[in-house]
Picture (cartoon, rainbow, N blue to C red):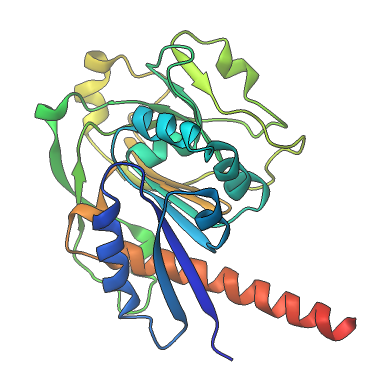
Length: 274
């Protein structure tokens, strides 16, 4: 029996339409594997129907403010950290999915959390310092019909993953003691057993920019961490949705489909046992 998968894009502000467009392009390559429903999400009721969610680039402070006023913050935290639904954040979405974000006034930014990382907001500078760069994305090379060319990443006032944090139960309290740093509220008393995977880096810019932006904790030999994954949560500093290349969207949808199929098999087995 063909499975139906509903993928939502948080549509409060930012580049949500661009994600919807690329998702539909990606679905055209996967339509034989599932029935896909791509929806815009603005309410808790719409979120509840989703198997997976994308949080797009935009203004993270604005998105968190609108989410709070729409009574969406807690449902989003439950979606990501309790129900462990697949969630991908790009740029501002990465900031919102981090457990810690610096260069932020206390109380000036609500986070959803889900990734045990500290992000440095606007690490690469202001809007006028936006840039594009070819990225080597090893996780795409193993995908069916993978492209061999580098992925062209678009960085607009982009954050960077400044530090991989230890997995702790509840909140990242040590991070809360740092100046100009906010943390996400804890949702359970269990530490995340899954470690953070570094999925992509941007070599060569740390050395040039570290003094300019005051980054802490990055190893130059690693480079700037611009994509990470931890269990069900994926985050990118750059904007795949602003390109015409749907390869990351195809890869991510395959992860979503694998999980949805596993959940269906588990439900079917449970029904047979009953």
